[in-house]
Length: 332
Image (tube, rainbow, N blue to C red; front, side, top):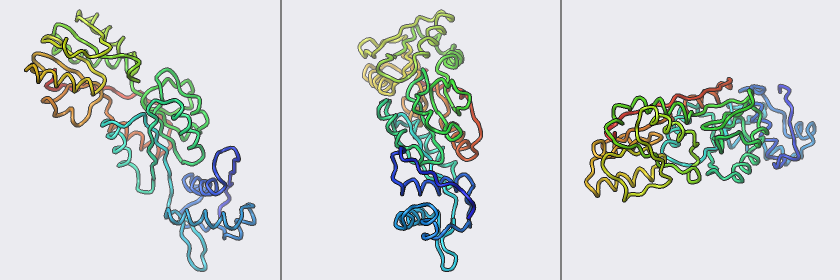
């Protein structure tokens, strides 16, 4: 058997059995063990490593159940397939996150397994999930919890195995990331829609920093755009349906606000894209058809999934701010 080191860390919060299993899967994912390589017998590994025979036997059984190793008479245990286990921690479940995940999964080989979890912007949950994952996965994909910095708990993960998604400001050149631009790119997208926006008397951004994790840079970008183009601007912290009137265009971050605007316009027989305009943040398949089609400013989440899969497969350095697109539809 090729020589590789079994690392046992008493402070890792895992049993010796779990760490033994991880040592083999890690060696396979790193290429130290290859398909066809013969593994030591239960007695040999027990003698050389200090693990009990029972622990070694259980570890081999777990690896067999995962179809990673096999056993045969006169050959013993051997590596049957490559094994890559990916930890994916997203912020919350939504239609565009589902697009991201499906694209990511479709671009990974079948030999990769993915554990998908959500932190829901809860710092305690975020740190606990990261802590519990340490040493158990080949690669880590994490949506950061805020836009101001990278949470220090992520420093416990090998930066070569970690990809940060969505938002954050990496201050370590070793970190890999695929981030969104919530400021200047929003201005550029609004500039593409300028001719449509000029049909309206006022642009209302529905945004309140405490009620959404969306970075406040977008408020500054929209205000700057409106000032430069002499468009009346207002930032409402909450949507008030009673104040919706013809001549307004709404820029909404939350899908719940989008639904309320559509319902209100229907109830008052106001026509989207004519009487009242709407721009929504983050595209989803439903926004392509609802209300005749909702204009959006959005990152391409399918492309984000593809790039994430490429990082996980190739383990090559990536540090990229993803392009944000404006997609014009009937609501504007």
